[in-house]
Every structure is written in structure tokens, then in C-alpha cells.
Amino acid sequence: MELLILCAGAGVKDWGGAKSDRPLRTKGKRQAQKIGAWLGKERLRPDLVLVSGSLRARISAEKALKAAGWTAGNIQCSEALSAGSLPDLPESGTALLVAPSSAVRQLALELGCILEAAPGVLFRLRRGPRKLSLIRRIDAFDLPDLFPYPAPDGPACRERPAYYYSQSAVIPYRRTAAGLEILVVGSSSGRHLVVPKGIVEPGLSPAASARVEAREEAGVEGRFGKTQLGTYSYEKWGATCEVIVFGMEVTRVLPETEWEEGHRTRKWVSPSVAALRLNQPALGAMIAKIEA
Image 1: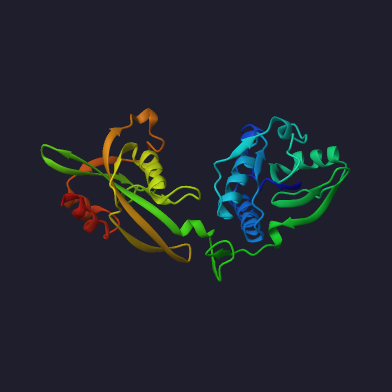
Image 2: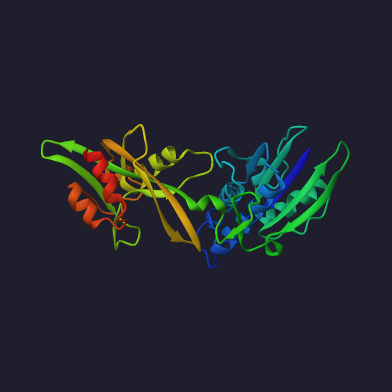
């Protein structure tokens, strides 16, 4: 079988919490994404993904898989890997193991080899019946800073992985005795009113991704229309992001305790007020489609 061992990206400095909860810093996220872009280009999609109990390991795995254009929904936590030991693996296929570099060095000793482990380094190995052979060591530092678009090996280069530029949004609404009402929420900065919007996660459809955003950003669930309301584009990360917009009739408003981003404000307003005050002017024509 083929074995891929990824050292988790660099963590934040001066972390005072539990070692296992130390998050990635921006550099560490980019390291994982660059490795993921390389895996995608090489078509080295793993059949099995195991991570240690470290938060850095899990997030590094997620960042790498999504940057390659693959789903991050099949990651499994391994107790053996958390202890620096080799997990039980199938005899064939490709497995990706992700752990902090200290755990990778310990794992290398168990495997009887020396691996120059460091944050953001990937080892590609082949496991035979009697020995483990190193095929290549890939350091994120040596990989391009820009990402191919479209993934995995498109001709253009962008500042972020290709999937960042495909997004979806949802306009939540309800019908009352007083007429149609639109739910708007405060932006992450608190400076604007917006509707839930986010990057389409690899492995999810635009509608499914928008449903996740509605729950996380606005704390609502509901029924989606059969068709999209429209699209718009805007500039970010050095290129154009394309956004597909859906309408959703709200059937449940989550209580504050269940609302993941309860720090935001949310309010019901009339369609005319929503069209006037939303940060994205293109949404006005889409709100009119809901009214029709």
C-alpha cells in the first residue's frame, strides 16, 4: 500500500491552553493547503484518512483535502496515531495519516526509519511486505504560494484554493399576515447587513452548502425553493467569486443556545427595506422573485 504522512501545520504561538487544543496559525493553514493542492495535482486521493487527537492535525487534514478538491467528511480519529503508533491499515490502497511533527517522529521510530519531520511536511512512502521505503519528502515551503484554478491543475493561479471562489447564499423569508418578511443578519464585522453566504464546501452541492450557512450564520432552518434565485459576482482574494443564491422559507428559528454564530444580530424586515439595506445590491432583484 501507499502511505502518506502529513505533519500538521504550524500552530499559534504563545498558546496557554491544552497542547491538543492548540490551533493552527495562518502559516499553518497555508502549509496544509499547499500540500493539499500538490496532492490534488498528483491525483493522490487517499482511500483512508486518519488523524491524531490534536486539533492541528484535524484542521490540517481538512484544509489539505479541501484544497485538493475533495471532501473532508470522511476523516477518522485514531487513538493509535495519537499515541505515536501505526494504526491498523488495509493491505492495499492509499492512506493519509496526519499528526503533529513530534508524533510523526515517534511513528518513524516505530516504523524503523528516520523522517525529517517538521510542520507542513508530507512524506510519501510505499509499504512492502518486509520494509517501508520513502518515495519523496514534500515541504510546503518548496511549493508555489499560489493555487491552480480551476483545480487541480488549471492554467490560472489564485491566492486561495480553487473552491474558495465558488460560493452560495440563501435569502431566508417567511410569510405573515402583514406580508412577506426577509431575515437579515449582521456581517462578521458588524458593519453591514447581509444574508447567509459562504464557500461551497467540496463534497456538498451549492444548495446543501447554503443550508449549512443558513443554520450557522442566521440560526434558521427551512424549505428551499426548487430553483435558484440568481447569481452575482464580486472581487475577493485577487479574483472573482461567483455566488449562487437560493430562497428558503424559514420553518424553524433556532434558540440562542443552538445558534453557532449568535454574536451576530438578526432581524425580520420588509422586502423593500432588505433590498435597500443589504450590502449586496444584486439581491434586490432576487428578493422581488420571492414576492412574485
